[in-house]
Length: 585
Ligand SMILES: NC(=O)c1ccc[n+]([C@@H]2O[C@H](COP(=O)([O-])OP(=O)(O)OC[C@H]3O[C@@H](n4cnc5c(N)ncnc54)[C@H](OP(=O)(O)O)[C@@H]3O)[C@@H](O)[C@H]2O)c1
Image (cartoon, rainbow, N blue to C red; front, side):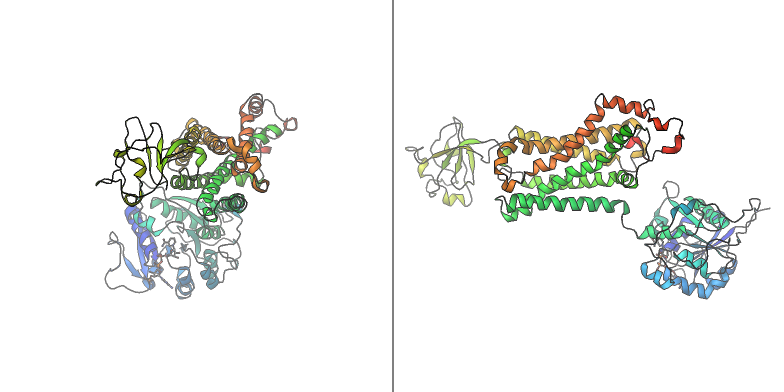
C-alpha cells in the first residue's frame, strides 16, 4: 500500500520559513513530504514569496494545523508565547520543530531560567533515550508520546520552554537553527555540505526531523536530549569562542611590549614622542608577531618533552595544555596577521633615516645653497665638474647625484623650488671645487642596503611567505586534501623554518650592535631585539635538542613503546589515552 505523504507545516512567512520551503522544493524532498507554509493572516495573492515556491501552498493556521504531522515554528522567539496561547492545543500529538535563535530579551520574555550564557552539560548528548523505541512501527504517523524526560519547568532554552508550554503529547525537537536563511535559500543541497542537529527527548520526533533534514540534503545528527538546545542556542550567541583567549593573549602581549618599547626608546631614549605612532608600533608589532610564533609552536614542544620525561608514548594533557594545543591555529593566524602589519608598516618606514644601520655609508661632496643664477633655461646647472667617484648632495639634503669621470654638472636636472635656491656659483668652470665641502661616511639617497639590510629583509620576507603558506594549508578546504607527508612538510617543517628565519631576521637587525649598545642602554633597559629574541631562541633550543641525537633517539624509543615507563608495564593501555594528534606537532 502506498504510504501517505507526510504533512509538514512551516509556520511563518519570513526568510527562514521561505528558505526551508525553498530547500525542500529544490532538494526534491517535496516528493515524499507534503510541505506547506502557514500564516496567521491570509496574504493577498502570493506577494512576497520567493521564486520557486509557486507550488508550495500558503494556508491559514486554523485550517492547516490540525492536518499537519510536523509543525516547524519559523517564528521569532518573542512570538512563541502568543502562538502557544492561540494554537498550542492544536499541536497535541505532533512533532514540533523549534528553529529559533532567541535574543537575551527573548529569554526574559519566555521566563527562561538560563540564557545564552547557561552552562549545559554536554555529556548529556550521549545519553541513551529512556523511551522505548518501537522499531517495528513503520506507520507514517509521527504521533509521539513525550518520554518521562527532564521536568518541563526547567527552561534553559526556547525549546525547553516550548516543551513545557505545549501539551505533553507534543514532541519538541530543536533543529535547523544553526542554518542561515541565506544558506537555505541559496545553498545547493547536492554539492554543499550543510549540517544540522535534531535534539529531542523523544527519539521518534528527533528521527522524524532528521529524516526531513536528510531528504532536504542536510547531514543530520541526532542528539538524545532537548537540553542540548541550550548549547545550540548559546552557540549562536557566542562570539568567535576559539579566538577569544588567543586574541586577548596577543593583545595583552602587544600592550606590554609596546609600553616597553615606548619606555626604552621614547622615555629613556632620545626618540621623538611622535615616533610612538608608527615607528615604535612597527617594532612592537614585529615583536608580537615573533612571540605569536612562540605561542604557536611551544605547546607541541612541551608535549614532546612531557612524553620523553614521562616515558609515555601517549599522555593525557591537562586542560590548560589541551586548550593551548587547540588554540595553535588562531595563535598562528594572529601571528601572521601582525606580521603582515609589520610588513606594511616597514614598507613605509624602510628608509635610512629610520634604519640607518642597514644602509651603506659613502663619501660625498656637498654643494652649498646660494642662488639660482647658474641655472639654464631648462633648470639645469650650468658647467662645472666635481671629482669623480663622489656623490654630491646639496646642503639642504634634497637631491643627490653620483659623479663619474664623464659626469658634468650640466647634466644634472634641478626643478621646482630648488630652481630658486640651488647654488651654482661654486660650480662655475673657473673654480669648480672651491665652494665644495666633502663629508665621509654618511648616507645619501643613492646609498644601498648593506649586507645586513639585504639579508634581514630577505629573511623577513621568507618568514612571512612561509607563514602565509602555512595559513593557506590550514584552511578547511585544503587541509583534508593533504596527505600526512604534505601536512608534516608544510605545517611542521615550514613552520619551524619560519620561526628560524624570523628569529635570525631580528637577530641581524640587532645583535651586531648589542655589545656597543650595552653602554648606551638607557637605565639599563636592553634593546628590544635582545628582549624579543630570547623566547624564540629558547624555543629553538628546546626543539633543536628534540631533533638531534641522542634525545631524538630516546624520544622515538619512547614513542614506539620500546622505552616505556616501568609503571605502565601491564597497565591498561587505555589508561593514558592520547588526546592530541602527534601529526600536529
Ligand atoms: N533568518 C535566519 O537566517 C535564521 C537563522 C536561524 C534561525 N532563525 C530563526 O528562525 C525564526 C524566523 O526567522 P525569520 O528571519 O524568518 O524571521 P522573520 O523574517 O521575522 O519572520 C517571522 C515570521 O513569523 C511570523 N510570526 C511572527 N510572529 C508570530 C506570531 N506571534 N504567531 C505566528 N506567526 C508569527 C510572521 O509571519 P506571518 O505574519 O505571516 O504569520 C513572520 O513572517 C527566528 O526565530 C529566527 O531566530 C532565523
